[in-house]
Each structure stands twice: as structure tokens, then as C-alpha cells.
Amino acid sequence: MTAAEKKQLAVTACKVRMGVIQGTHAAKAGHPGGSLSAAELFTYLYFKELNVDPADPKNENRDRFVLSKGHTAPGMYAAMAHRGFFPVEDLLTLRHIGSHLQGHPNMNSTPGVDMSTGSLGQGVSAAAGMALAAKYQGKDCRVYTLLGDGEIQEGQVWEAFMFAHHYKLDNLCVIIDNNGLQIDGNVADVMSPYPIDEKLRAFGFDVVEIDGHNFDEIEAAFAKARETKGKPFAIIMKTVKGKGVSFMENNAGWHGKAPNDEQAEQAMNELRAQLAELEGM
Image (cartoon, rainbow, N blue to C red; front, side, top):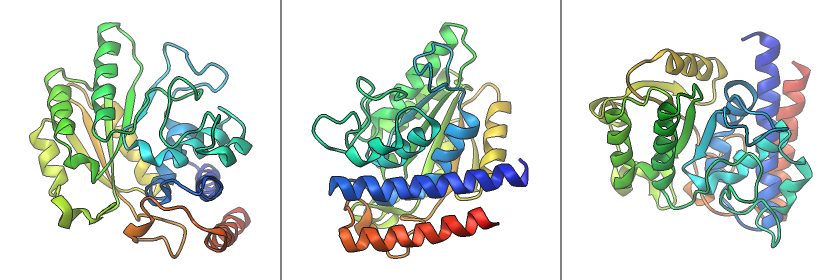
């Protein structure tokens, strides 16, 4: 990746974060914390990794992305908007009556959304099914799914992991956003999923752990995922919940709460300053 490409990705990730704040503020509801922690991941997927075309969102040979932690739709929507799937202005309609951007992804109303999700644990099962179907059909498309670290407390997740190993789904890439916090607090206190890497290896996955805010590490992880044959691949991203907004960072209270007018203004001012610094580099 060139320095110019990395700069553009960082600029876009900052704009994604701004979209998260604008959308949740306009909705007076939503989940900013986990959307912000995954901003780099959403950006890299839609601008580098995924074989998708906003002009042809239902192309049968496209890669698929399933947002298993569906409540972080504001982050995915922001990345998709900047990629051209729908106007950026639509982000301000988040959760509004009649909007195609609801609180959780809806494949029937939003162009580019591959699976309706929201009930935690179910998205990864759908992704595994998509990956198996692609193999049966002889397609070389890949399937990606993003889970939260709190979400992997769900038993269905581990059934899906067992399924993925059994069917040697090397076209499936599971990504876990390990920001350490869920709605009720620290994941280690609520129901510890650790050690995540060892558990995934025991379920037959190849695993890498990365800094989820580092584009070089994200790029290397996806390259390794594509090279892995005969087994599914997992990326564990260490991230900061609420990344980019000082008062939201590492604060479980911002899991599912929208900023008020003053908080949104502060958040946007911080992000505008970051954007100006990035664009000036």
C-alpha cells in the first residue's frame, strides 16, 4: 500500500466516523461506540478488499459482507455511502420512518446489504451458509463477516465456527472486533470470551491478531486470509470502543446511546480537526 493510498483510507475512515455521529445524532438513537471502533475495518473492506460494485449491487459474483453485529450499522452505512451505494445525505435519515437506513441492516431495502441482521449470533451462521453455497456453485467469491467480542458469547456463533471448519470454508473470513466492551460493561466481567485466539484455533481456524486501527496490519491480515486454503480464517482486531471521539473512547456507556446536540458538536469538532490534520499530511 502506498503512502497516498494509506492517507486516503485514513481520511475516509475519519469521514465514516463523522457519518456515525451525524446519523446517530439525527436519529436520537443508535450505537456509536462499536461503529467507531470498526471504522478502519469498514473503510478497508469497502474501498480495498471487497469485490463489489455500487452500480451493480446484486451481481451474483460479488463478494459478500455480513454485519453480524448488526447494531453497528451506522458505521457500515457511512462506509457504503462514501463508496457510492447511496447518497451520503441519507445518513441523516438513520432510523427515521420510511428511511432505507434502519437501526439494523435490511437486505430488502438497502442496496448493497447482503444479509438482514440484528439478533446477535445469527449473522455468522448466514455468512457460513453463503460460503458453502459459493463452493457448491463453483464461485470464487469470498464471504466476510464482522462480529463483536460480546456477540461471541452466543452459543450459535460456535456452532457456525464448527460448521465452517467441517466444510473447510477457506472462502470465509471471520472478523472479531475486540474492543473489550459490551452494553453491560467489560466483556471479561460479563462472560469472558478469552483466550479468543486459542478457542478459534481449537475450532479449526487459522487466526491472526492485529491492531484494528492500523491499515498495514489490516491489509496483511486479509492477504493471509486469501492465501489460507482448506480451513476458515479469523482476524481478531484489537480496537478502542468509541475511537476518535475523546469522551466516547473506552466508555461502555456509549455502546447504544446517541449524542445530544452539545455532545455531537464536540464530537464533530474533534473529528473535523482530525480530518484537517490528515488532509494536510
